[in-house]
Length: 507
Image (tube, rainbow, N blue to C red):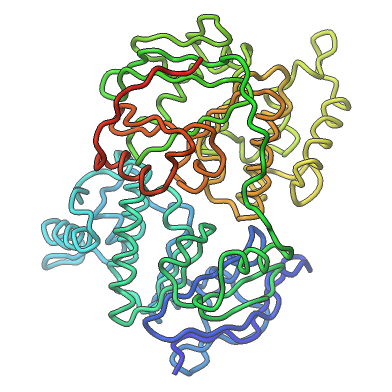
């Protein structure tokens, strides 16, 4: 008997179908991957199963019987727990309080919390998960983003779910943290828990899932066992066309040195960093969480000044006091946290995309609104930002389209010599990834220098001309294309490879 069956379920918003009569089933102890582009209907489907949204029609069956899931409480009663991509933790509460919210153990009277038991339960769940290093007494606001994601998942594990829905659970996790998560998922499945796994990372899907359902435009277009398909077939089903190559072909031509960093250090964060990026070149930077990659980028961009060392841009000293000064001198940075650093979510696409390029449309100190709109509309069309129109608040866009708005903002800036991309495809679908890869390659082809920071090994390998591997605030290795492989990257990043003898950098 199938544990979960979805039969012709549908949902529309204001007459626009989000899910169109989707059907699938999954038995206990299986991992089912839900695949599809942003806007394919995955989130709406997940919300209907978790009780956050009520379907317009169709049927959900649990253990062979039709059920009504009208609220999250109903979902919990059936043992369905959902871990959303957006964190729902309360930052001012401890790890244990977040994990046991609504089910805190009490002593004698309901209002007397048994803190010792609460901390013990949370610590045990975290230890079973492989994260005994997270103290249950720590306030969530004091944790890293990756640790907060772990706590979010652990919160669901406390309830011992029969069905666990995971939405992009590894977006902020390192390779080692992801493997611990996968070990736990396999353990849960072996114990009879059903897992619905949503991810844009196809390599993860083939690693962890047994079965798959591909959604496109709110419909199920392909389903089956993963051993019957390859990545190319899944991509073709998701985007509606074959993708011969994910990474664009490039004519690799290197010009003069644009960025030169020497002996850059920041106490306790990174030390003695040296690297160069040439015009027309893409230099990748890979490392595990906490390796110092983002902090180096922020130091170059003037957002987090270094303590010592030198930065030169096109041969000129460039120690910027602020990002504004960096932008004026030809540096653009696409940050890893688009919602926290890259966008004003309640502002429109027009306001966000035009934020860094006021100078292009200024007339006698005043902004020419019509000219600004023409520029933004043209860039939005070039990037295929959906839905069309630039008057919509960015908050209403999917993650992939929000990322395109961030790109539009920087592509509209004139005179950029160096583009820094920090996790440019985090949380976006495969079709949007391919578009972003093309944009990065085109920027290099037009003569810009590109520093690409990514925790996705296929991404940095597929795009980079050279690779810098970071470990604990130091450069562990500098690799040329003949040395590129996921094994080599991971070995250097994890400290499992012999230290590389520093070579003279090419200028």
